[in-house]
Image 1 (cartoon, helix red, strand yellow):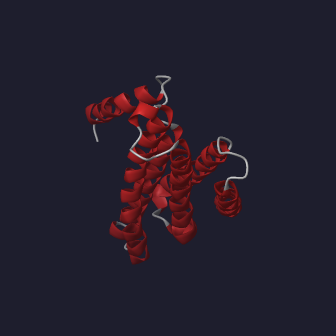
Image 2 (cartoon, one colour):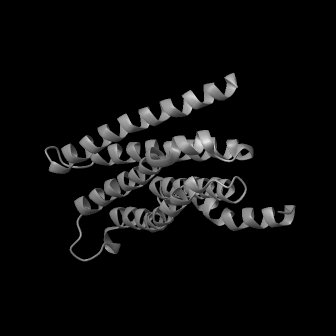
Length: 204
């Protein structure tokens, strides 16, 4: 890839990154987490393709296949999160019959769904990609792994913050807190796997 093509890519992204940094409510942090997760999955897909095409390792075929529907889901959440946030803030733009609570619920369910995508992908194939990915793409494996973990953690923070706006005693609070607790445990277990592989790479 030449320098001009890279600059064109950057120019294409600038409208979004500038919008994120413009000090406006949207695109919001949930949308950013969805994008970060999507990029992590794309990088993971590259790892799979290299392992299959260059490493002749067919064990990565089902991993690459599992990534495809998850990418579609993340693209959907990328849009849905910012639309929900906009409608929460601007009551005049809300869908008919929808309440503030409805949008707070949505703005918690979306990041938790994004987190679930990240954690499920890593639990299914993260360790395999770290340990057995194409040798010359080791950096890609570690970066993709950590991008998905960081997205998951960010999503939990968003969901937990949104719960503060619900009325005390709302049943959603206990439901979402339970999910957040479980996801935190999964993040910790996956993070331990990452650093174990990191240390073993140093020993090699």
